[in-house]
Length: 181
Image (tube, rainbow, N blue to C red):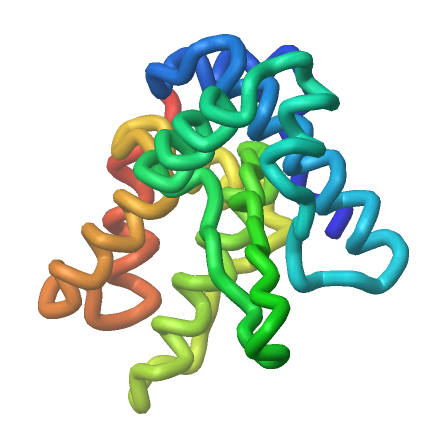
């Protein structure tokens, strides 16, 4: 997965603050993410099973603050809390932090070209597809992403304008509108 750049600590903290989290909430999320990453490196993909007391001790906070912060993180969809009740006398809480990734522009370009080619291959009369190594196509795709703001917005546009983008030539014509002068 080399095409995905995980947020580094500074970027992650800034991202969490932009989402309205305070320092203790951001610190808790980053701790949960670190514990989860360590567990996954050792084959445990289920999530974090640490108690509020243990988390509070690690962050030098109260257990009540941890409870409130966990509720806030769950409300912001940064964690998912589930319960393992396979042993009726020993219920375990499992906290799974969201994977926060940012995709590089290069990976978005590559992914969008792949999406368009899949779209083109689904059209029975179409025989051509975009060349993923063509610098001009890559530049046009980059300009499309910049124009729409994200690769997801471009995909939404393509999906809602299928009647206009009917074959390879229609895509090439559409992309030419986004060429740099």
